[in-house]
Length: 243
Ligand SMILES: [Zn+2]
Image (cartoon, rainbow, N blue to C red; front, side):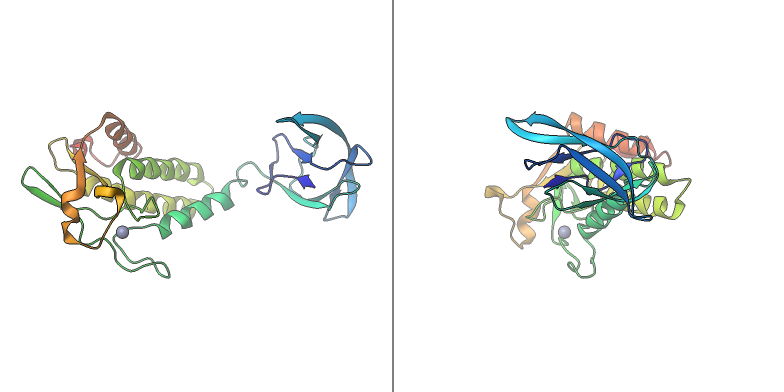
């Protein structure tokens, strides 16, 4: 079996394959699918990976974007693609963005769920705040500020990469980050404390307004750092909103 990157290979990066079978010839061919011509004859090198014998092949010298077929005698051919550096992650970023969107909490997600967790509140020092929004981050539909901060920060960082060449995509990434920022801001109590996570006794969440008593309220260094980084990446939010 030929093991190749399913994502594709960076035009200017290292490109390699692994072959897991014993092969009759320690060589491989790379065929350009647009011309059906062999563009590289490569050598396979024996390698030991975790005690298992494999063969590896390198075709880093190819840098022309396109689709290629890799052939090794005795193995099923594998199709791979070489992509420009600024395009290689786009598909994964879009998939990740759609996944994060599908995890939105507190609002309907078409085809996934209706409005949710509207009966969850956090109480602290005489103040009550709703505890929904951001994104579900576990199978039990729980939700945590720290993870929300980390996801929002990642979305903002990725957004900046696409700002020039794909502004609409960058704007969509930023919009999703703002969904998380909204949760971070609305779950603060203004005295340094925040509602941070929904953890009922025994770890089981039930449909009950009494959930409000199970929302943890505390402040941790890690969470504050996470929120700070998000807010710094988003200058129009005032640092005073950290409280
Ligand atoms: Zn929810």
